[in-house]
Amino acid sequence: MLYSYDRLNAVNYARKWALKRNPKYTNFDEMGGDCTNFCSQVLHAGGCPMNYDKYGWYYENINNRAPAWTGVKFLHKFLAKNKGTGPKAVEVDIKDIKVGDLVQLKFDSMADFAHSLVVVDIKRPKTIYNIFIATHTIDRLDYRLAKYFFTELRFLHILDYKK
Image 1 (cartoon, rainbow, N blue to C red):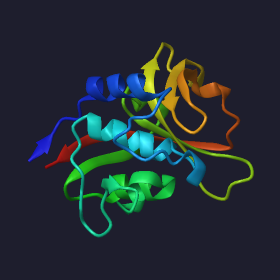
Image 2 (tube, helix red, strand yellow):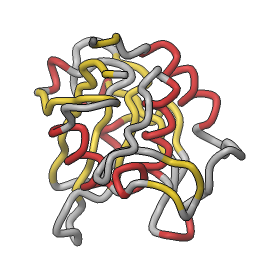
Image 3 (cartoon, rainbow, N blue to C red):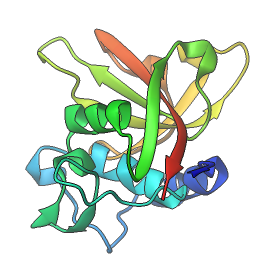
């Protein structure tokens, strides 16, 4: 059975914790960045249950977590291919992005996508100048997506989840 992702709860969580850390989770700022860990927390707050499969999406502690919980490319792969418990996502054009969805960025010096963000507000017309995000590592809240100097971006629309 499929369940609806609670975008309001997800965004409320993102707003509450964007500029600080939830003590229930390890802060990965000094270990490559906390952005994807934060996005995973937001998805979980939106109702998405953890997936404890070998290549799943879960967090118990720093030593018991899936790569998809904290790694940009691993989260993308899990969300795109997940057929089991937990969230599912598809890459979409900007016109289909909603609050509570994720954005991932690739930068000049990087071979792969390296940063994950949560969409917390969208104004009209829907352009990168009117999409506002929250993220960790360099903490941001209500920050314009257009202010990033990225070479590529992808929008991940969260569809639903399975229990």
